Amino acid sequence: MLNNGYIYVASVNKSYYYAAKKSAESLLDFYPEAKITLATHEWWVEEEDYEIFDTIITEDVPKNIRAKLWALSKTPYDRTLYIDADTIIESEDIADVFDFCDDHDIVFTRNRPYNAKITKLSDTEEMIWHCGLFVYKSNEHTFKLMDAWYEQYMKQLEPDWNSDPYPWEVRRWDTFSMWYLLNKTEYKDIINVGEFPKPDARWNFVIGYFDKELEDTERVIFHYTIPKSDLERNEDIRKN
Image (cartoon, rainbow, N blue to C red; front, side, top):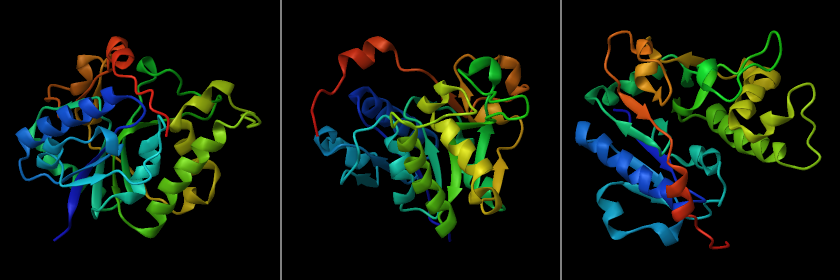
């Protein structure tokens, strides 16, 4: 039997840690048998967390807004659903997500251009996948992709990184890093990418989406934005 589970990552600001715990608790409300991993900083972990998460990763977790990219290949599961911390689970259908990658290495929901900072890269190129939630298999080439994702993102942050022919603003987005790997490197021929079943918005209903995206179904995951006031209050100034 496959060992399936969910992973959250919280770094940089303690609001993400609080949000990850809240989301994991909502997951357990609908799927009490769920196995859940948290990757975060050791100095944030509380004793009660071990009642929520079956695995807590703290060693070498980078203090980086995209620490999730570092953590993905550290999953202890055969199939993993990565979930952004700023989410709430709203349906018992959350238990079914692992079936979606039977024939794929990684499975995404789609970006909605009307609700994204940037999706269009050129007249023919567009970042179609939403990288805040996805299911993936534990295998050698998928783990290599995940590690390359982190490396590509960090490369984008280097002062001399050249974004041409793409907009300079893409350097901020891990969505571009994944798009680049899946379209411009050897991974385009190695990784079998799939899509959540329609309507895919119910599996990752991002704040700002139109209700019609649900097509009369219920939300499984609501993806909100942590208020700026919370981020400012919980900013972690510890230097590590």
